[in-house]
Length: 223
Image (cartoon, rainbow, N blue to C red):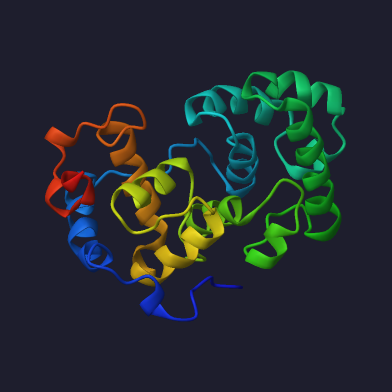
């Protein structure tokens, strides 16, 4: 398993990353029920749901997956599905042609090389069609309890920039930085805390700074 960390911690240290422990503690207190918003019953369902979540809301994915999994409950059945039928079932999740193609190819590999099971291994996961580090980290963290790295989505990217931890948009580099400033024991939950805060308070278009419990630790108060 490849853990992403910068070669030197000094590259990510500044006065705001030093406040990371305070921010993390506050997030834990305010979002004790934070969890993965995708509905799933096993690692396979979470893997497929996460692939579908690209450029799509979790709410929409949760509407798409029940009929999909009812018809194709495992990798074996999905691997032999007609791609046109997959496209029809996942159409409302967006980018359905590419997602259907990747999902079918992914399931073929799961069935042929992994005994119809989702591997609990980062290297094996990222080799699957449609699966990058974000998806692999989601599956490993939530389905297997393996902390392979912080999940970086649009919410995590936005809040990490607003809180002054990063100045970039590259998800891989952001993960490297967060993996360094965040204790490994909190890697799995950090994204859930940030996503919860991003949906409730630190919204993309209308952040509610005046009601934010993180304001004293946020560089936005100086802008």
